[in-house]
Each structure stands twice: as C-alpha cells, then as structure tokens.
Length: 325
Image 1 (spheres, one colour):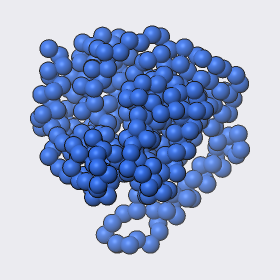
Image 2 (cartoon, rainbow, N blue to C red; image 1 turned 180 degrees about the horizontal axis):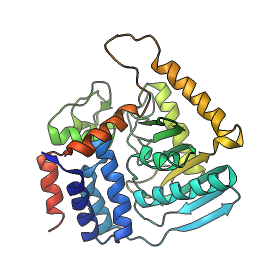
Image 3 (cartoon, rainbow, N blue to C red; image 1 turned 120 degrees about the vertical axis):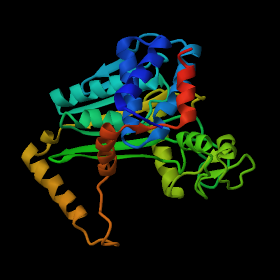
Image 4 (tube, helix red, strand yellow; image 1 turned 60 degrees about the horizontal axis):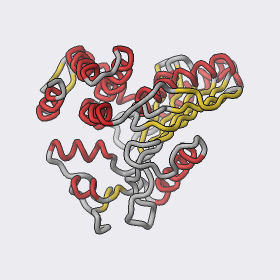
C-alpha cells in the first residue's frame, strides 16, 4: 500500500513517543527511518521500528556524555542510547568542529544500530563539508575463507558537496545485510546466490537460513579487507567492543573536512564538477542507459516519493499499528 509521507512520519512519531522517546528524540529517529524509505532503502526504513521499540523496552539508557575531547577530536560515550541518536549527535559535533577548525573527527562507543549511515553523512555534506562515516555491528559476516560470522556488516559512507547537490556513496561491506534478509522474509523472496551461508557453511538463497548462518563479504577478499579496516577503526580505535554482542557497545567514526583547508571553495567546486561531467559523459556500454553518480538515483527517488508517497508492505503496516497498542 502507498502511504503519504506525512502520514508515515506521523505514525512513526506516534510509535516512538508511545515507547517513551521524547518529542525531540522521536523526531531524530523518525527522520532517519523516513529518509531511508524516501531514498529507496526500505531495509533501513519503517521495518526497523519493531526492533527499535523492543530495544527501548528492554535496554536502559542514560544521557550521552563526552568521554574524551581535544582539538579537532571528540569521543562520545553513547550510554546505551539508540544508534540513531548517537550518530545524529556525532554528525552535529563533527560538522561544528570542521566549520570552525577546518576538520573534525568524532568517535562513539556504547551504542547500537544507527540505520542508514549515508543519512548522517548527508546532514554534514549539506553544510558544505566533505564527510566520511563508518560503523560496526554484531557478527554477521564470515571472514574470507571462513564459514563462521565474526565481523559486522560494517557500512561505510562518504559524501561530497557540489553545485548540483552531493555525491553520496553508501554501502555495506557485506554482500547481504540483515535488512535485506528481513525484507526478503517479509516479501517471500530469495536472496542473491553467493551472498550468504547456512549454519553448515553451505551457500544458500534462503533468507531464514542466511540469518541463522553468515553473510559473505561483497567482492570476496576485497570486501573482507574493507570490513576488517572498518571493524578496527570503529572498535579498537574508539574503545568499543572489538566483537560486539547483538545490540551492545557498537562503535562509529565520523570525519568531516572543509575543502577550504586545502583549496578555495570555487576551486573545489570546479574540480569536482569536472570529475562529475567526465563521469556522466563517458561512453556508455548501452546508449539507452544513463551513467549515474553515487546518490543520484536515491535523490531522484526521494523527490518522486515525496510527491507520490511511500510503498509499504501490508504486513509491515500491521506490525507498526500493533506497536501503538
């Protein structure tokens, strides 16, 4: 069923406030979830609300605090707060540091799943800054050559402002994510061949078997290497759990840079504009298709869904309505 954006936002807000989030915190989480839907990423959208509600009911939390600070760097203790709230605070903090000092580096520990990392990067890029973000999660991905999940799905996102909007790269280092598995189970679909293993270490296209087993890294050994880099930077470097338990002591890292520390803004704009023009003007493999820059499809989808509404599975709507009882 297709739901108007404002109706879905109102429903998400009601659910979150019903589960004891303040108006301010509820809006932060609702916007992160809604932006995932708008950009065509339902795996990180309203399907996550039941899990968020469960987390709020079962886990205690205290006000976040700054654990360490110096110069351009800040380390945030999430104090068990939702990853959405911790990541939003980190985005605000890293942007403020980069605007005033040219660069900001913010880490966080003691938090959990934060949703679509590209959303927080977008918030920073909207202020004219370059941004990089990564985070870890509980074991879901088998190291290359293994069958046991050890690493998280470990997403990474990077964003760059330009005159036409922003270049936004956002992807998981795993071939399939938990969100993909949840959506596949809801819709009765199979997952791509070669993306996951069952509990016996055999390749599977069954999302339920994959959820009990392990995801594989995307791109073989290269995706595994990237996942390992992210795991180290978002755990050992920031003081989070090296291999976190489900929903406990995840870590994240954000970097923001003002282009003006190296070049003037006009020069940066000309440079990135030239790269984009050359990429989009490259000879096409299929003349009928368009060469897109990362993020372009998502932002186009966002404009369409703002006008037409968001498609939500009936079963997902039923689950959300139950959360208000």
